[in-house]
Image (tube, rainbow, N blue to C red):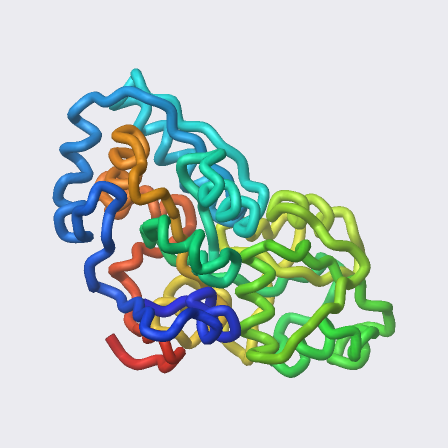
Length: 312
């Protein structure tokens, strides 16, 4: 399985020997593999369980988790599912510390945590999402190359006229360090190069970027596809390729992430049941796409631990 958040720089930093490939089994918190989990997901929802599931992490797919949680709680009225979207780093730290039962992340836990923390966690890959640059409504640029994006988000390109736009200062709205969306975007744009450019503002969540982009002229930022809102800003092409899910599935659009949900190896029954539900047909069959994501099974490319991409 690939991740532009199985991404370039982050992915290559993983401990040797880790391989993640589309279609291979995932180990569930309860010890079942992906085939068992997918088959048992609907049954898990039908068999009422009780308990409290809590999560924190990536804001990029919080809406998907919330939508699935509503359906799961309808089927399991004795379970409470609640959480926040404070960024991948915070979510992974919280699940490793045991302050939440699930940590949501756009990147592998290995990129944010120490090895002794990661060994106690189990990864569930629940969806794929594209991520791309967005610009203010008044910006006339509708396509940027990766090299131009690198210039803008490193502070080397500072005026829209340098990339074919009007003579106006580029306002760069970045995400804060710890954001999986930022890590994914930077990995795609900068590769292995280190970058510490903050821009004109560093925002906490995807929703904050939506709001700020809608009220700021001459701005640029980046969002996952599920947060695109053409009433507030414009999503633009990268290297001439439109930011659409169809272009993510064949890897022609290069900026994308796999959405991970981590739990501890000894997760409770309610948490295990909810994660099984996330991988069931009830979620993967329809809800994932309704929320603007791509089922992991739809990806047409794979990426191994060395970062090499090949056809599925």
